[in-house]
Image (cartoon, rainbow, N blue to C red; front, top):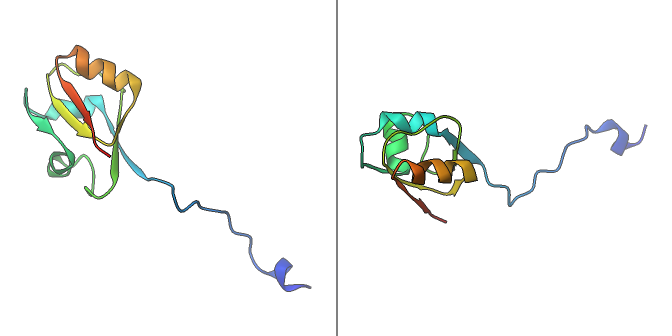
Length: 93
């Protein structure tokens, strides 16, 4: 049997793929009103494991506090809910 048929097939993983750490809005309720929420704050509260990954905020749940949230990416529903609660967002690259 030829060598190319004996070797296992492997999928292609693009090198430019970005792995996001996902955080839902309902998880942001653990922070104090008016606090600045960034990667270090997420790690300190145990919401993500490492601050080296990119962070994406998803709109699952409700937010009742005004927070200044800094992340790599936001879903549109998360943006709307954070601004409606009186907070602000900052996308870092």
